[in-house]
Length: 183
Image (tube, rainbow, N blue to C red; front, side, top):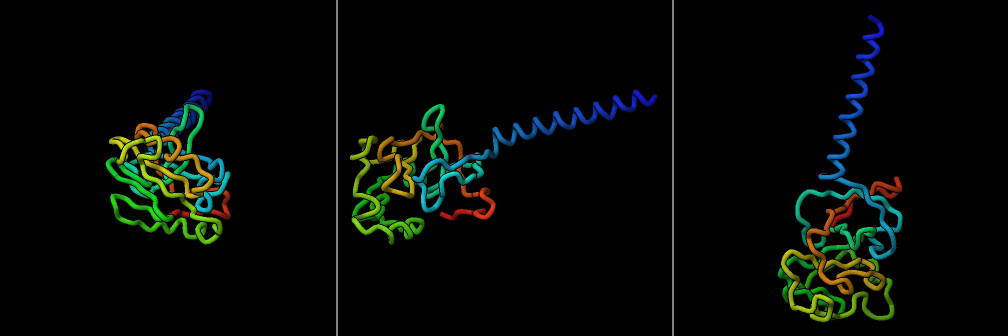
């Protein structure tokens, strides 16, 4: 009788462990996944080696930070600047979307440090690999916050929505740097 009870307890533990693994896989596949910041293209907002949670729910909005597949082996973290149909232009270190100037408060700290010209050089979408006046349907125009040291849509072109993993704004490691990043 004791042997049967021991087998029942073992079986219950195995089932519980299996269910926990399945739930974790579903959460990681469809809802959230961790990501490590690699490089300096998002400084000062994000630092190299910080760890973040990516949310896979919902569509990216303007100024969200997104993670996308640059290639099969490499993911990038950038900020959404342009949505499908937007006209994007930088002139005199100011962002214009559809002809309207936008403030980018997340760049203020870096702009104060720059002494030798603008943080973001002037350009239009036509002068990027997009080669058109507007962000194509089903794509995003993204840029790193460290505008002088970022490989982004100015070099890569528009990012297809199907390559976007999700949005992120929660840094959970290192523990002393835990923060929620606002737009």
